[in-house]
Image (cartoon, rainbow, N blue to C red; front, side, top):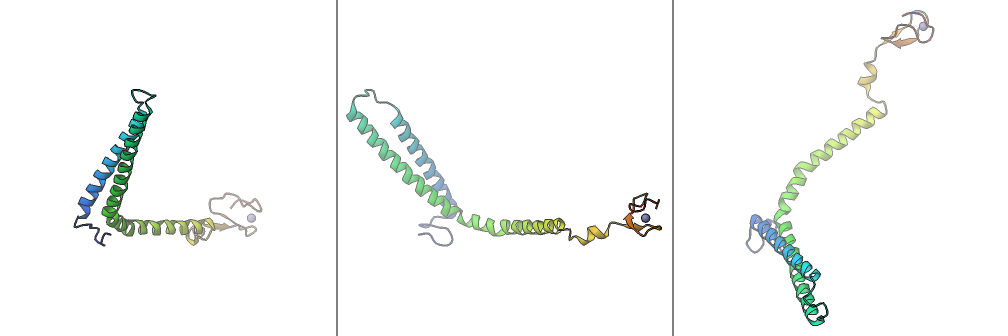
Length: 147
Ligand SMILES: [Zn+2]
């Protein structure tokens, strides 16, 4: 099938995408026409021959619509495969790195292993009992004497 540069039968990626889109639209229209024609009752509900003929033509239209849809999606995928891989390579991997970095940071904080945070808390030593109390404390938490 197609070569690596995304061309098929000498068609460029842009025209492949356009043709794919047109085929998908036509396929959808044919499919909808077939579906509505199946649901629309015939002039005579008891004319089974006419009903069967209508069902058969609708079936053929639906099949053509599905084939066009499949071909259209194939052409679209072929035309878009390069932009998608480029996007994954350039955009997704930095995002994945950022996510794993953030997860690592969260784990460090969660386990209390952030050294900057614990060292930034200043303690004052009680002159009476030697208990280490927080800097903003007025009274010692152990002996109750003012700091
Ligand atoms: Zn004390």
